[in-house]
Length: 328
Picture (tube, rainbow, N blue to C red):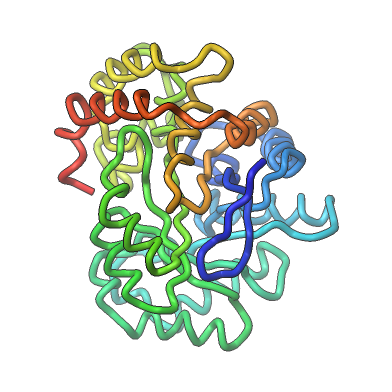
């Protein structure tokens, strides 16, 4: 495992982290035993960054993480959580001191700690990025010793650019993968210049970039890949990176011929992300120990040749960009 400096937090973290959405919910049935085994495997393989949220399984993900930390003892990894999506309705006005404080207190309890490493505003409405009072509330929680750092999770590049105008924002979490290449332009340059830690989510486009799916792949009713393809529950960009399923499957076949024989397509896709210096950590999810260990191993994959990166860019521009580039 290789490690990177994580922006202005001053911490060094594993470049492959553990995305804990799948062990919370909305990815089909994941038993608690499998969830714990996946997290243990990630940590055993050098992972020192975990990303969760208070709404993943309504706290299930945070509580599983806390239990595993208690089992293992020793130094805790860097644990990032999120706040805001418990709001119903999810509107800008809800991002206020009373609600945000309550969300943080709940996560402190769920994660069994007295101070959270990082709290990210969880893809708030765009208007929130234009409200300095929200960021002042987060700053007050740092001063109060409840959180060490705060950041944002965003849907759109423009939201990320606006967020990093606030000097206290330590991190931005954004979707970036072979099917979502737009952040690699202005956003990554600005984030790097301002020493903002970049967390990359949806790195495998909800599993499409594992190369294991076909047009006949079926998903459980409680899996967002079944119920959110058109953004019925939340932004459609979170599901298959917003790419129409049939279009993505055709592109995956083009990508397959570029993958070296000694690695999986998932590892290839993760290594592509890690070629970008501005990235602090990439957070693939895992439903079991084998997936978690394989994800961690992507850190040790050899750098991709420039010709391959060029071919991937062409596939994106010709097949994928018309469906996604203008939206996020």
